[in-house]
Length: 310
Image (cartoon, rainbow, N blue to C red; front, top):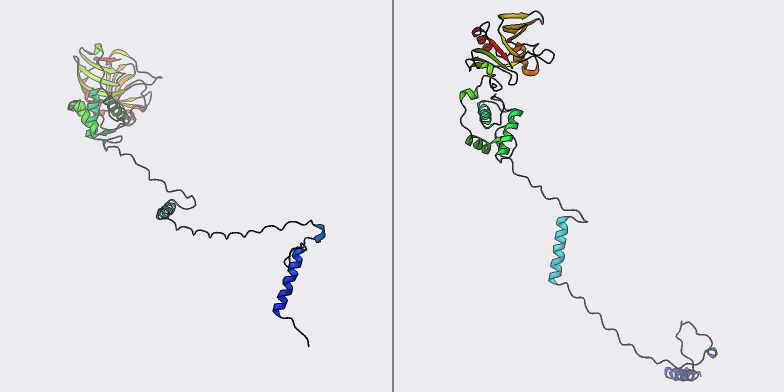
C-alpha cells in the first residue's frame, strides 16, 4: 500500500528546509531573478534590515478654478476675439477730419457788379492798383490776400463773410466814377505841360491818354505804344493833320481816326489792340482800343493843338 503525503506533511518538510538554508547563509532568490554567482566566492554579509515603507499619501484632489480666474480667462478670450486671433492687428481707427473752411462770397473766377465793388473798395485801401474790371482774376486774389493779412484774417484770397464785413467797415461806398472808370489803369498824374490849354496828355507809365482842357480831364482811354524796335517818340508835339479813314501805305494797315503828331506817328483806333490787348504793340503810333471814344476825340481835337507824350 502506497502512502501519499498530506498537505500538512509537505508544509512541515518545507519549513525544515527553509531553516536549514538560513543556517547555511543562503538567501532565497525568487524565481526569475538574476543569480549572484556561487555562494562560496562572496563573503557573508549581515542580513539587511528590512523596514516596511509607509504607504504614499494619496494626492490631494485639484481645486476647481476660482470664479475670478474663470472670469479673467473669459475676458482674455473675448479680447482676443475682438482683436483677431493669432496676432491679427485690430482695425485702424477712423481718421479725424478738420473743419471745412467758411464758404466764399467771391473767389477766383467770379465776375459781376459785386466784384467791381470789391475791387473799388480794395483800391480805396491801397491794395488794388488797377481800375475795377468786374472780373476776379489773379490780381484780385493777391489784393484780397494782402488785405486779409494786414487785418489778421486767413489770407487765402477768398472773400468770406468776415473779410467782406471787415472791408466794408474800413471803406466807403464807391462812386459810379470809381466803379466805371474810363481806363483799365488809373490815369497818371498829368505832366506839368498838360495843365494849360487843350492837350492830348499821353502817359507811358499808366498807358493812358487824357484829353485835358485847362488842367481838367474831359475824357480818358487806354492806349498802347510801339515796341523796342519801333518806339513811340516822347516829348511835346502838335497835331499836324487828321485823317478819319486813314490807311497806312507803309504797313498796309488801316488807321481810322488818325491824329498825326510826329512824322508818321499818330493817335488812332486799332482793331488789333481791341482784340488782343497788350499782347501786341504798334509800329510807333499810339493805339486806342475804344472806337467810340477815339471817334468822339477825333471830332473835338483841332490841328495845331498840343500833344505831350511822357
